[in-house]
Length: 492
Image 1 (cartoon, rainbow, N blue to C red):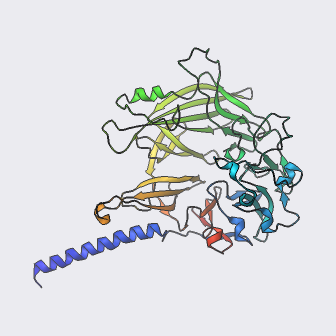
Image 2: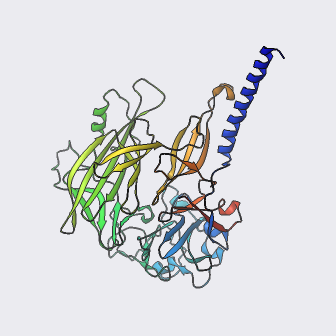
């Protein structure tokens, strides 16, 4: 065979191999093929797969030292699952009896159009000694379950409206219930639970430190720097603290607002003339709190302002700024003793397990792209560890965290990402195209490298057990899979 023909054949073979490799990368990502299955075990099972119906928020498995809980949500009434007589009707706990006229609190403009037929119901189950999740309670609408670290107190943050007659405490927060006997009895917290932070209870994101200390994070108050009104002597940081599991709470105040104005951001990039106002006066805002010990805590308030590229490029530019407040406990009260500002930093997520290391998702650029980073708690400086893992790697892609799904255990990190890949335009006859795919990754070297897990669907993760570094998952959602088993992978 002539040498030229050999080279031509080899070249064609290489092109065909590259094409097949490219097709496999796209197909395997899109169909969620492959991934590790380390130390697979069965956590438990449900008799009815509807009792593990996942939603984009508030559902899944919560493991405490005293029990394993499963929260599911369905667009149907509780009676359709024929609960037994010992299952607690939490609507009746609050209203005294079932009242079909009481609709759950629903966010969005279509709340008033919800009918009795399409109400949502949240189902709370608990794992028994035989490995079966048993239904223990249900409530109308959405509800999130949270527990203090030892699991002795369990809180259900619901969207259920309080009765019109319950106005003695002058709060309009939706119903919060608490159980101190692992779900046998539930008490309605009539005063609310951090009602100053959030009126829609399931939107709360409490942060526990130890058994009894708990923080709740809202939006800091702003001050009009250019108005004629007298400036207040103290401004709320939007953060509240409780030393008794939320029974009583107090706001953390500062001498000045932790928010910067849009003018501050504009001054950092005077070359940008077209600024977005979609996120409001103070831009996109994210607040985090971190307690290091009995005497020291920190509040981070990150803001992001978007503007058009001064050169008319297709992408916009982000201007980030983070304000950090150091807190010190004095005579049982937390006080802000120092405020520092970091330009070009946006903290999207902040995680700590026990009193160990602190890891977060931060943006140090101008494209709104997070990286995994570790916080040096002594120097209060961030060390980037890696980019977000992409299911299309090594192909170019844009990757984001799916729904904030980022967890930290004793020795591992777990993340759920969604990636977008743009194939060459010639494959689509000169048109732009976009291929998206989700994946679950874990890291046992603190984000320096990532391995993909065999978990399908962005709702495949049911929970994470940080003390054991185990991710809890199931095969598909209830409507597309009749397998009632719930599994876990060990990530160590």
